Image (cartoon, rainbow, N blue to C red; front, side):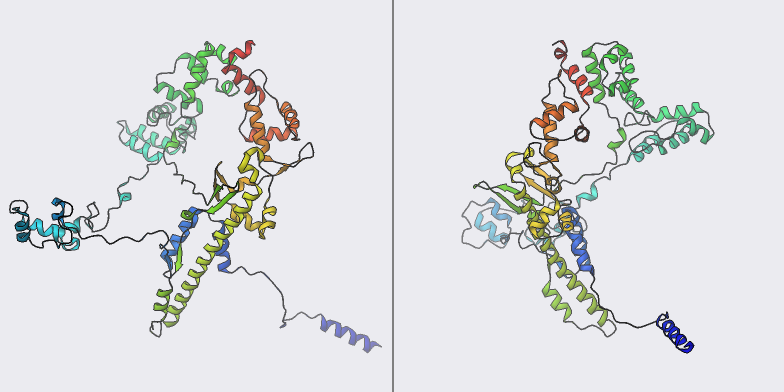
Length: 531
C-alpha cells in the first residue's frame, strides 16, 4: 500500500514538473503589417499632410513618379522665332521660306541693316538659345537673369520673418545708453514672453542681478519705448496705458478707466461714469478707444502662417432637388508606379557582391510604390463613400439650414457604408466639405441627440445652440432672457433641456449672462431704459 501511494505521488510530481518543452499551438491574431499601418495613416491625413507625405515618397522611392497626364494639356509645338517677321505684314511670308542670310533679307525687303545692329547682334538674335552667352545669362529666355543658368528662385530673395526677441535685440543694439543699463535691459528682454509681457517681477530681477531697483526701472523704461508700443508691460493695464500715452490719449478720465478694468469687464457702466466723471457718450467713446488697442502686442512677430483650408469634397445642388458629391481633384495627389523603369532596372545584372542588395531594394521600392497607389485610390473611394452618406443623412440641413441638423453618430454612418467606426473617425478627421451653406469639417455633422418635448424627432445639439443664439439675438434691451426664460422658450418650440445645459451651451458660444447682456444693451440703447 505504501509503495502504491509513493508511486502515485511520483507520477503527480512528474506531471507537474516545470521544464522546457516544445509544443505546437494554433491560434488567430490580427497582424498590423507596415503596409496596413501606412494605409491607416494615409486615411487620417489632411490634404496638406498627404501632399507632404507624397513629396517625401517621390524623393525617396525611385519607382514612384508623379502622374501628370490628367492635369497637363498637350502643348502645341511652338513655331521657330525669327525677328524679321516682326516688321512684316500678315500674309507676306505665307507659304514662303524665310530668307536665311542678311544679304537676301536686304535685297528682298529693300532695307539696309548695316547700321541697324552689328553682326554679333544678328547672330545672337538668330542663334539658338543654348549657343549664345546672352541666352545662358537669361536662364533660357525665361525673362529673369540667372548666372547659373537656372530659373530664379523668388523665395531666395524673401527675408525671413523676424521674431519678437530679434526685433527687440536690434533696437537695443541701436540704443545709446551706458553698459549697465544695456545689460539690465538685455535681462529684461530675456524675460519677455511671446505676447510681449514681462514675466519676472522687477524687484526679483533687481535682487537677482544685485543692482538697485531704480536702475532696473530705468532699463524697463528704455525697453518700454521700443516698438511695438506696449512691449515690456507687467500687466494689461500698463500695456494699455503705454499705448494710450503714445497716442496722447491718457487724460485723467482715461487713466481712471484703465485703473478700473475689472468694472469694465463686469459692464458696470454707471459706476464707471461716476469714477471717470464723464457722461454716457464720452464713456462709449473711451471704451471704443480701448478696443482699438492691442492687448498682446508681441503676437505680431513670429506668428505662424495658417494654410488655407482645402476642401476634400464638393457638394452641389442638382436640378432634380438632390445633391451631387464629388471629390476635389486638386486635393488628390496623382502618382503612379513606373513599370517601364522597374522592368529596365530589374533586368540589369549587378556585380555578385551587390546583386542581392540591389534586388532587395528594387523589389521593396516597387512593392511600396504599388501599395501607395492602391492606398490613395482606396482613400479617395472611402472619403467619397462616407461624404455621400453624410449628405444623405443631413439632407434637411443642406436644404433648410442649421436648425434642421439631425443628430448623427459614427455608428450610423459605419453601419450604412459597412465600415468600422474607427475608420469613419479617421475619414472625417481633418477633412472638409465645401457646400452651398459654407465650408464645414466633416465632424461638424456629428452631434449628440436631444430629446424633443413633444415626442417628435430628436434634435441635434448644434441645432439647439442655433436656436439659443436666435432667441438671444432677438431679445429686447429691456426684456433680456435669463437661462430659465430660455428653457421656457425652448420648451415652447419642442426642445426640452435643463437650465445647466442652456448655460453650458451659452458659455460655449461666448455669450455673456443675462445681467451683463442687459447692461450692454441698455448702454447701447438708452431710450429703452426710459421706456
